[in-house]
Length: 239
Ligand SMILES: Nc1nc2c(ncn2[C@@H]2O[C@H](COP(=O)(O)OP(=O)(O)OP(=O)(O)O)[C@@H](O)[C@H]2O)c(=O)[nH]1
Ligand SMILES: [Mg+2]
Image (cartoon, rainbow, N blue to C red; front, side):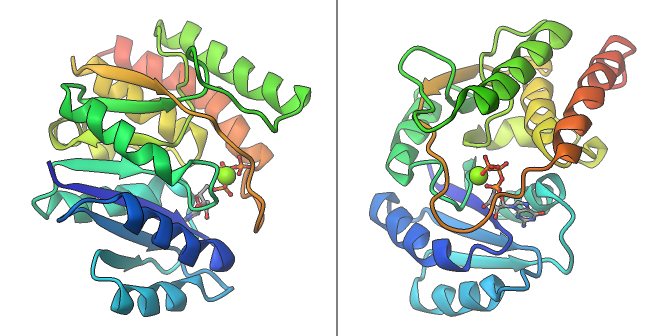
C-alpha cells in the first residue's frame, strides 16, 4: 500500500532536512512526504521547496497563514486523497515522533486497521522526558476525553497516526474545525463512530531538542470545550 506522510511545519528550519532524510531511509518505493508549511517566517517553506527538488519523494503544500495544525492537516489530507495513496500519515516535524516507528504504523494498517495510533499510553509506550506537570495535563486530558466520548482508546490526543484512505473519505472533513489537540481527538472519534477499526501501537514520545513548541493554553482550552461539543453532536446525530 502506498503511503504519504503529511508533515506540517511552522518554523522548523533546523528540523526539516534531518527529518526528510530520516524518512527517506524508512519509506518504500512509491511512498511520499507532503510538507505542509504555513508561511513560516524562518524560511522553512523555501527550504522545503529546495529539498523537494533534491528528493523525488518530497512534495510541498504552501499555505499563506498559520491557522493551526487542524486546518493544515485538512488541506494536506485533501491533497493526498487526490493521489493514489492508500495510507495517509500524520507526524510532527520535531522528532517527537521517531521516523523509525513509521514502518510499524504502516504495518498495522496493512494488517487490517483503518486507523493506527502511535500511542504513549498503551503497554510499551512512554514519554521519557516529561516531568510530572506535563504528564498530568496530557494524561488528564486523555482521561477527560475517554470519559466524555465513552471511548477505550488510551491516547486520543497524539499526533502520530496512519489512516486508511476509506476512513478519511467517510468522515466529513469539511465539518471539522478543531485546531490543536481537539483535532486529533475529533478525527479519531469520527473514524471510530463511523465503525472503522482503530488500533494503538506503542511509541516512545521524546521532547523536541531543536526549535520551539507551538503548544499553547488556547489549544488545551479548545480541547476542553470541544470534547463535550463533539459528544453532543454525536448524540444528536450531527457527527
Ligand atoms: N503547518 C502548520 N504546522 C504547525 C502549526 N502549528 C504547529 N505545527 C507543526 O506541527 C508539529 C507539532 O507542533 P509542536 O510545536 O511540536 O507542538 P506540539 O507537538 O503540539 O507540542 P510539544 O509537545 O510542546 O512539542 C510541528 O511539526 C510544528 O511545526 C501550524 O499552525 N501550521
Ligand atoms: Mg512537538
